[in-house]
Amino acid sequence: MKDIKPYIDQHKDRFINELVELLKIPSISADAAYKNDVLKTADAVKTALEKAGCDNVEICETPGYPIVYGEKIIDKNLPTVLVYGHYDVQPADPIELWDSPPFEPVIKKTDKHPDGAIFARGACDDKGQMYMHVKAMEFMTETNQLPCNVKFMIEGEEEVGSESLSWYVKRNQDKLANDVILISDTGMISNTQPSITTGLRGLSYVEVEVTGPNRDLHSGLYGGAVANPINILTKMIASLHDENNHITIPGFYDKVEELSLDERAEMAKAPFSLDAYKSALDIDEVYGEDGYTTNERNSIRPTLDVNGIWGGYTGEGAKTVIASKAYAKISMRLVPNQDWVEITELFTKHFESIAPKAVTIKVTPHHGGQGYVTPTDNIGYKAANKAYTETFGVQAIPQRSGGSIPIVALFEDELKSKTILMGFGLDSDAIHSPNEHYGIFNYLKGIETIPLFYKYFAEMTM
Ligand code: BES
Ligand code: MN
Ligand code: MN
Image (cartoon, rainbow, N blue to C red; front, top):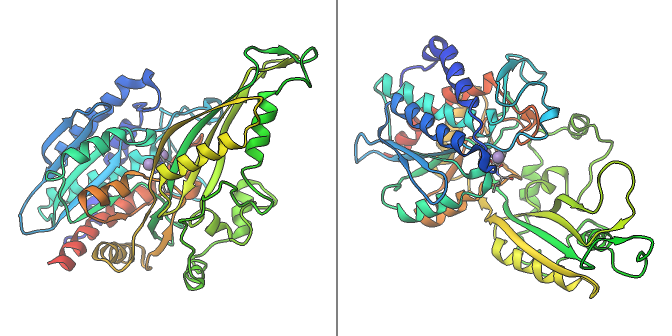
């Protein structure tokens, strides 16, 4: 394969400008007000795939947002890589905490990105990372050296649970048949130490509602004599962890796989500075489950977190009131073997059981998904590692991530293939946060590394 570096040098301004244009469209899947923008982004991705040399590019309708599909089948005897990514983004709020508007991309230098980074919602998650694959494809088709068949499948509902993609995958197994799935939607350790994500956590996301009296009450006339749903809800939530920060839901840990001491020792070899971690977050101390390190707590251990809590009076000044209702949104990150449907049921049963008779409880499941782990002794992993080793000059480190991409487990069930997670983001890139950004270095390095994955995957398969 010809060296891609001259091609990148020649075209990098255009690569950056094209991404900037894509980032200007606010494709927020969670908010129906942005429906037209989400659809417009799908069209933009379709055009980009066509320009990159894909055939049969189409907007595939689903019950929700469409899937953009495109392919280049050059030889039935060659292996097929299925590239997945998402063109939707998270909402931008709290908007006032952005230093520049979320959909008006700007390039600025940061400590971690001395070559500059593009600041915009979706820059890293996932438009920037998805678009690296489109540009890598452009290089391989323009220079006539595509080593594999390629199928692209880019969805628009990842940030809201990928329901339509599940629907689509279940109906299109033959069309999507592949030898390996390639995704860039995760992170790596640093710009000098690449890593390959070998695990993702599962997720169960629920909303709870606690109802006390049938209307808001004067907190003097009734206070002390009826249940205050906010007091009750906070007490119930507090009881979900014990003094060691273990989760108290009966059966919650039953299927959790304990790693061997050897595996944990292997994990601990990955470069990590607790001081740098704390100072990046402005915290004096970390906090979590007893008996586990920070990197274990956020990857191989399940968690339960309140993501939002509301009820009662939160306006200016004081209002003396006992609210009729209190609410919380709760997520549980799960590890492989924990089944999200089962965990959701365990949560619901437990939460109802700990409520005093003075209130009624409603638990509404939102979405969820299974976790994922992949061994490192497969061709996909080896090809990826070889590609990184060539472009970074050091081997990649396998690393289990705390984040979730629920569709990956579904791919394994429905399409029977393994996913290789070649993420190029950094933890400091602020995905889902104000001032999300993606390093120019990371973007171009991704474009440089991806074609080598194809090359080595083809070589190792044939
Ligand atoms: N790309 C992220 C997941 C991710 C980021 C995994 C970094 C590993 C490292 C993805 O877009 C995401 O945000 N997933 C959601 C789950 C989804 C069901 C809303 C998540 O992890 O919260
Ligand atoms: Mn993502
Ligand atoms: Mn995301």
